[in-house]
Length: 138
Image 1 (cartoon, helix red, strand yellow):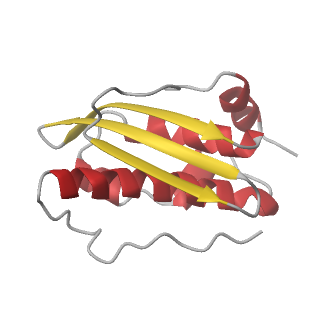
Image 2 (cartoon, rainbow, N blue to C red):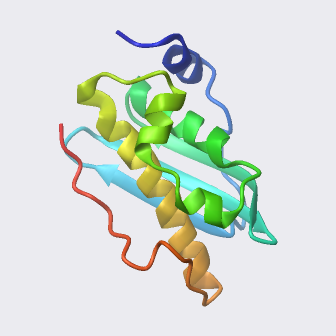
Image 3 (cartoon, rainbow, N blue to C red):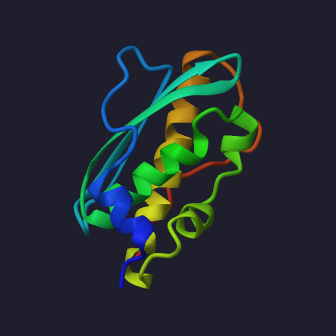
């Protein structure tokens, strides 16, 4: 049912925790399933130099958060803006259809953190001008 990568990122999540005085923080949640993700970004010269997450939710939510942080660490803001939930799912070697929403939450939490960074620095990030958190389906 779950790939080895999903199980690995669930049992041994990477980048768990909080960044004090983070440059950007994004929190999203789904009241239907109870999953809540919070992403913390440290950004220097438009590069994600550190990223941490706190996730309250199922194994797929934790694995999606863990993998998403791995995918964006060391990348430029421009690269991170183009991250999709599909990329998270592919990196995890798939998720069950009922758990795809977990990867959407991870993508949205990262984009919310970038929006927070942009707001704090009074900048516009290309590609996020019309970003809105999506309704998450089950």
